[in-house]
Image (cartoon, rainbow, N blue to C red; front, side, top):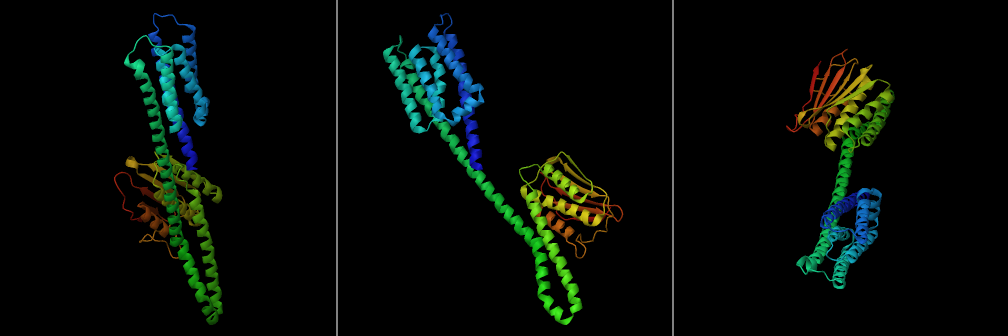
Length: 399
């Protein structure tokens, strides 16, 4: 995938460079026309102007032609031949020589080093051959040595641009691969943390219970039946936790805006549960991959608590961006509410609030839960901005 992206970027850069060089060619033609002021434009001159202008405009204005040249560099040999033909037809003193300079830059960029060196030799040899066959009237430095040196220098500039761009593409590819590797490592770390924090604890409890069950069966068969029922409930809870972990891992897509992912999460919850869930976003900003993962998990757990315990008729989720890059997410329902525990932990045999506390602490978020019996529950998660991290200590109080 990263290779394909690098190829697209390379082709785009090639199209831009060719377009800039063709724009320079057209400007050079306009400048050259000033040199013909007071002179009669002959048919060869007009033909050369039309040929150079036509090729320049086609490469500048047609994306398809530029893309074809970027993917098939050997096609540009035609333009090299046309440029040499202009020199042969008009001679070495024609102002239109300026318009052939852009060809040298593009040739140096499109062709690998051996072919680029060959192009430079062809340009210089062709120019000197024309100068020998049709000696110029003057013998100034530019006519004899300056123009050939310019051809060589411009080919070298094009080659330097080519290899600088290739180095940039390789660096971008390595960076992309490193980012993918880091993202995969983060994903494994999150999965391990999820397995340890929730599913691992549940499975450990089931294992301890199953280990003690044979002894209880021998001593008190009636109690063993209740104990086995609790183990079955624990196994069901473990299965649900495993499904939730997989859903959360699949749901977050870091390359998409947080507001978009939250909206889809709310819509999916509404379709599954049947309770209206209204989502609004104002001035939304985004978070780091780890922080937004924990934030989404907290929101998911809050919605799950609404589904299991609140008996709510409607839910509202609000995402609000704050100055300095901070953001706030509010999950509010109109359910039956509850009395929060003084320590902010979940009631016995419940784990949702405890998990939310731990997730907020892990991501450096501030968690606040307000609730009162008969008046619904309000969960507020605040993420820090440029002013620095927030104290992750949760706040639990009646509304």
